[in-house]
Length: 196
Image (cartoon, rainbow, N blue to C red):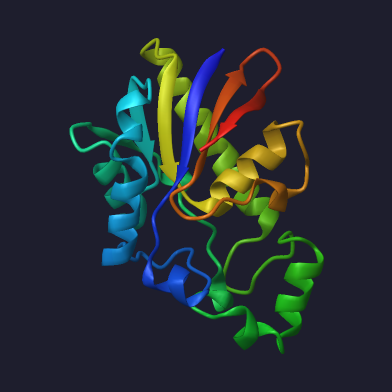
């Protein structure tokens, strides 16, 4: 049984403005950086971890460096956020008139976004990324880790591997929040121990 902390990155300009931010490589805002520091400065000292993994996106790397300033990061490219294609940088209100956006919402994100990914493609990619983490942990005999990534990545992985709910939105987290979970390799199941 492995213990893994999943942490969503801090706020970017697009997060604050309510815009889709997937493939746009935004940094944290000053406010976002400060919130992460305030949330995690003391807490991070009590996280038992042997290795830290991060999405390759700036917002995740910056978040990881604030929470774990002394630690080296292992970058997992398949844990990047969903590519939102024509939705990228737009708000819900700006997209409401688009038929493609309505289909995307009706199918809970499974519909392919023009010039972007479908939920199915995204799910396969991030699941592959999660298993890259597990393979790396096994290679070095690590039992504890932290993963700093995106809200969409966490929702997708947990909706596929956690029996609590198969509804992707059940696992939604605010920026800077996370889950402490056990991963059972025998049945490929994530079990939430605590919401952080």
